[in-house]
Length: 457
Image 1: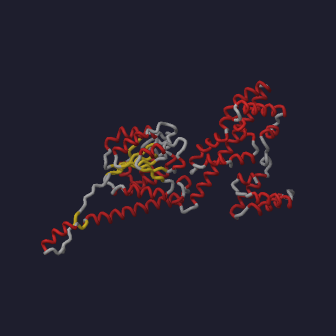
Image 2: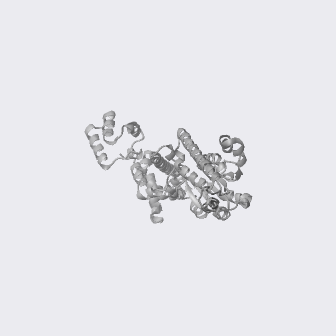
Image 3: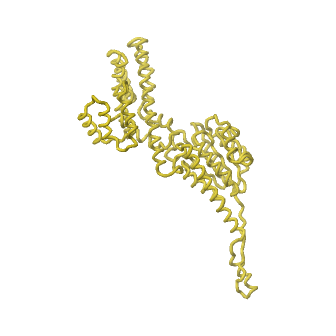
């Protein structure tokens, strides 16, 4: 049952007991009968039958069964009982020297497959993955879970163990044992990463199952769903433009002014035959947009730039900038080529070099130095990015200074607050801006776009 649970099947204790009874009844001589007997207990939906069959066949393929603990695996590789005993003693010595940390560090490598699965389902491991929301975070949370399991400490102890094995067994056999131990640590890393990837996919699938493509996280969108979300964004821009036209027509007529109406009524003996109207002239604000176009936020930034191009008439002056490590203005490019061709040029690297890693601190300082003096209290600045700085300086103070110059600074983030960990500087950026708008899905991007459009009032 441990193998089926690892493959994503939810199997209760009662089902595990019933499966064991079924195996006892039909025996193991006929594989097809055994497969069908277990399936009758653990497969609850017809759609899971093919996945169950594939898992069953993999488990009973030679070399893929229950492989035992580390010591059994080392003996299966041809190491003698003396050599395996030497490794065991060294691991225990590390545990004693470091007051138990070594034991926990090597626990994942020593464990059987079933025990490793149990480690990945402990409360501590579940807590470590609780902020996970997207498959884009797989690398970070894999490292986080490896640290939780102590695998990083075990890797640092391997050098000392290798030297001790040289002294005890000679260089050749010591290296062979140390290499086998290193391979076991790598196996644990792959298993942990596979667990994180499976968890991320399940979270994305659950999020996507709550509605249509507009509710699917950007990272999980298929090509067909991307087009559906794009149509949704276009419908939104059409509605906003239509509402703006209605407001302009009403504004052109003006609002009835009671005082002016009463003054005019003096001409007709106090009877208000001709209503007086007053036109309120309101200057449209400026909108500046600063988009991170690195790979992690590529889809969200593309949708927002499409929305931006389609709604430029809502603002007096729109300026658009993109960045990865450097800043580039693309206002002219969007005006001349239109959204589709301009975005294709931007993605091809016409504005900034997209091969670099994100450097928010450098980009924000460059933006302030080059364009900050042109901002005023009519300017609304919108920054779109995940705020992941790759552990480089975040320069949140620059954002705070821009907030003091502008009418408001909005930050559109394609990650929720639960994911603001590791190299994310979003907690500091959130404290510096007027408001953070989470835009993980097309639906949330639509809400954020409405918020931006409302700033024109």
